[in-house]
Image 1: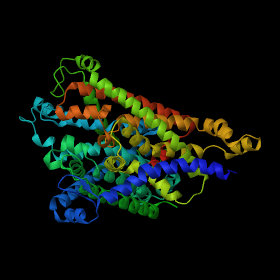
Image 2 (image 1 turned 90 degrees about the vertical axis):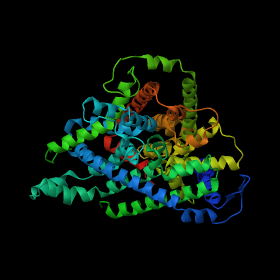
Image 3 (image 1 turned 60 degrees about the horizontal axis):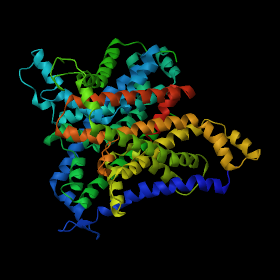
Image 4 (image 1 turned 90 degrees about the horizontal axis):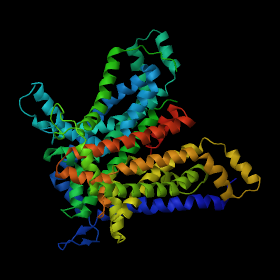
Length: 282
Length: 275
């Protein structure tokens, strides 16, 4: 029913724009990763694998990458531990307050990243709310130094930020479970725990996978929380990239690291999508 | 849906704790914006409005607020200008590379902001474009086409194509049909998308971080101050930002509830983050 012209008019502008401002930049990032910087701080457009070789040979890059993945893995685990029971509760047991509780979870999802990270900074600092509270109630005499400027602070803050992200897909997958399956399980004599383990949990695997992917991918690339709360021991891979694009001025090396990150992220997305398909309820 | 699972008290307590974890830091932030003694210290004392007074006479903050409003409005315009046709194209046109197009449009939603920001930074450098608010607008607008596309695509699935067919059969041309039938039917989706894009752009920091010229947006102005040291003035501005985000999100949610159920909203939010 739609003419060729109509289809061309709706297709060409967005495709052109997206090619120009998303596809070309990603390709450019790939190209940059083979270039280099001369001693006069000029970017040289000749290709070599030098940046990738440096990545693999200097331990600081791989170490930081692994540390970032370890931080992201912990954030993912904690977000699931908080998000799954919450989703289960809201989906199955919240009764009349279901709608309200659901809104209460998605509100933090859209509240400024910066506001939430800053809030933790004021809570965890050595003169922060938590330390002064602990001294006020005489639990500790001195401020606990490990609270702020540590990987702990980064993991805590990112968990706070990404728990609603993991909640959402898990909740969606729980809501999609036909309630009569659960009824049937109970009627056939299964306990609540057996029903959960053999009916609910397997059916919610796609939601768990999607939630875990969000939390892992988004926290892996974070650089603001480590800058604000991480201190020297909480540096993540993106912080190295930021400094390479700033004072250290080595864009090509920074591009190589970013491209590796992009590859890891896209690889994970495909992997989790395939796993999800395998597990989804037919 | 009737509840078939037995109530469990420990689970209710656990859920309450998770809610406390999600909200306590924000509540503390708000409380201390009224604290005369600074951002820390327990208990809070000397209730005061002086930080808000300080804030309202702080020229640099208001300049950055103005910049952010400008950026957000322009980002909404760009994202809708390309997001609406993108959703139409995904819905009703077949073209080579359609799947790739869909994946790339949605990519900025799930990619860490640093990758979107840096790749655009390299583009602007190679093209010889100086960094300014314009580059931030292009960055936000492009990244948020994803939100516009998913919201409007979901809206398109809900209305009868027969209406458009009737309009065309009755002699209206495509443009008239688009303006009089398609757009009015998508009204709620478009308003919802605009609200979301505006809010996300106002709060955006990771992409702006790399594309910033001389003029700061609000989150970057705050970021700059955080690096120098913290005062309750930042709590005060954060409280105001929180209040505005809250209103925008509740408005968006109400808007969606008018046209669909909670389950569909969840699906839609999810779709917006799917490759």
